[in-house]
Amino acid sequence: MAILRVTFESGAPPRVIEFDPARAPFQHDGRPGSILDVLLAHGVDLEHACGGNCACTTCHVIVKRGGERLSPAEESEEDLLDKAVGLTPTSRLACQAVVLHPEAEIEVLVPRYTINIDSGSHGR
Amino acid sequence: MAAEREARVERVVAHAPGTRTLVLRLPPGERLAFRPGQFVSCLLPVGGERLIRPYSIASSPEEPARLEILLDLVPGGPGSRHLFGLGPGDRLRFTGPWGTFVLDRPPDAEAVFVAAETGIAPIRPMLRRAAATAVHPLRLLYGTALGLYHDELAALPGVTVEVVAPRALEAAVAARFIQADDDRSRHFYLCGVGEQVTRLRDGLRAAGYARRAVQYEKW
Image (cartoon, rainbow over all chains, first blue to last red; front, side, top):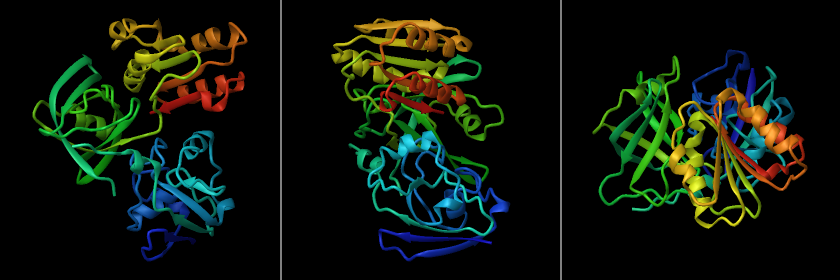
């Protein structure tokens, strides 16, 4: 089994999720077996405004551990990450980063803000 | 999570059997502030679940109470089938605006917009915005059989529009902007469906255009 540990900059309680990567997809948004796929299927309501289609940055997470056990970022993901608020060298889009190893131990931090929430100024 | 909004379908415009525009109207007194090129994510109740389907806003920010989205019917796609079932008066929930494929002002160089068929949707407000203040040339290379918005975009000041067959789009980009000269100062805005967009992106970057000068949205 793989393990995904999630902490939240918002202060929400951390989560530890055990799952079998071979059983992906676990739901319908994001790449099958992606961090987003795993989180949504286990009750972690991570923002994913574009539906997990690699078209926004709202599912930005910071990988604290186990990044080498994830699928490498493709150019489309890197281009979007360029525009993410709070970008770090280990930032990923949760919809694109697929857990590859059956016994991976991954730890991610969900940051508080994204650029899209800032720019989504809803006038009335 | 993102704030949800609701609009009503004001009008449906059929362009072809599998292509239509939904004209959406926000409730009285409401408006949506967005940047040219951004999209909304439609929240669709399908089969007991809620599907998220992003659609570029094809109308302009200058009309903030009225949104146009351009739809392709996707074979076997429950989201687009649901949207094709909507008619005037029906409600549609959405979040947004979202997205970083935007143009707030024209770049300080020739700008080339490359649209593949309904990929014209975000390009339309971007090109309108660019045309309002552009100093450098604006070009639209449009791979289309339908020719949506062609006449209005061709009438914009400073805009040159060239239409090619959808299948000829990649070759046309290469011929005009890679093989024709050594100018690599142009800025590109690409939009379409599928891997064609990433091939165009890769070709332009490999030919020497700066990475950040090649912006794109791939649906």
